[in-house]
Amino acid sequence: MCIEGITQAQRSGVPHAVCYAVLGSGSSGNAYAFETQGHLFLVDAGFKAKVIIERLQMLGFSLFKPTTIFCTHTHQDHLLGVGELASHLDALVVGAPILLENLLDKFPQLRSWSIALDANYSLSEGGFSTFATSHDAPESLSYLLELEGIRFMVLTDTGVILPPMYRMAYYSHVLFLEANYNEELLQAGRYPPFLKRRISGRKGHLSNEQAVQFLQKIAHSPHLKQLFLCHLSKDNNRVELVRDEVAQAHAGRWQSHVCAHAQASAVYRGLA
Image (cartoon, rainbow, N blue to C red; front, side, top):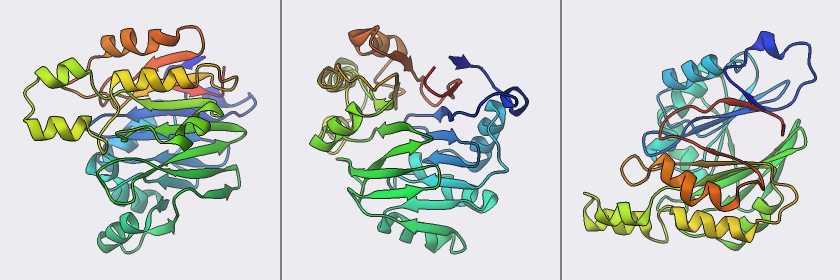
């Protein structure tokens, strides 16, 4: 069920389920929000803090709950607003040691939790696992969150698919999967050769074709219910291409949503 701009008042009187949304994704910024009855979780905060707060409020997320921000890597399109936002919300910032060291140099008052790769951690609402991504940033990683019994996997900013990713995605209920570029648009575009090589390399991003191949490997998952195709390039991809090349490849197996560059999605509740 898609809930456009659901408000706190609309949520009252019904059993609570995790509410979640893409606040924006792409080279201009990335942030994902998840709200349980007692907590607000973000994966990345790559927009200015003011923009993230505005989008959270617009979509009806509470800013008056304990908040945790999970950080994936040091690139500014994922990290830009973390320090200011965490200061404003008194949020706990979770990330790899190098990322936190750099962040605490600028915001020494932040509450932080240093984590390891390929590790499992507990939360009051569930838990989370970390896994390595193949990207040109030190200690780059991402997360599988389990909140109120629902497993959410964020799989972006990796140039190749690593073996643990298949297993985690197979057992996920909601998958946020990168479909960054169309190969033909990238090669025909205005980017210089070195940047094209970076994007399409092993430490870059997933193409539409790679996203299709990945989904073919997990197509028979009995768990996956919602698929969000995200981190689309502004210059080297199009929503309609992702819809035609990727989303339609497995139409009917799960609900698919293509996230336009840097734009917020609707809010979704549970797995309905």
